[in-house]
Image (tube, rainbow, N blue to C red; front, side, top):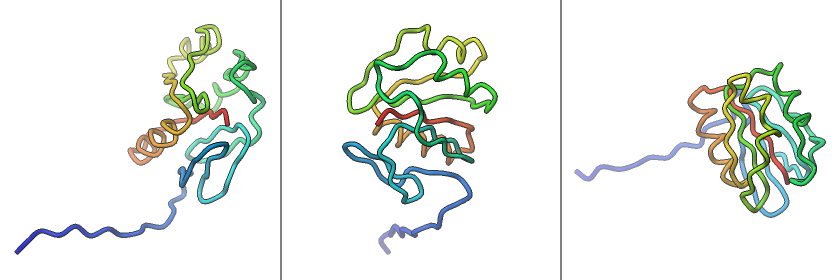
Length: 126
């Protein structure tokens, strides 16, 4: 008898997950977002003030400290770009990991880490 693989569509859990992405947008729980935002497993912070990579400052990340993520995944848009270390210094000093990727890679990585039960924040520049 040949082994078979069955795929089952699972319903949404209580956690936010990315359900799609493309040029100029991401989808979280099937809702489309076209502006920069921050996603955590238990909340969505819409209209993140950091609209572009050039606008990123330390202040854009300091307000994440009280939310106590284990790690922040920074999605820099369609192109991978690394911010100056001073921008993420508050996170590093507080022992919060920071990973920088293009936005599509952040969506995939966030879903994997969230499924593992990790407290991760995705900060996305759209």
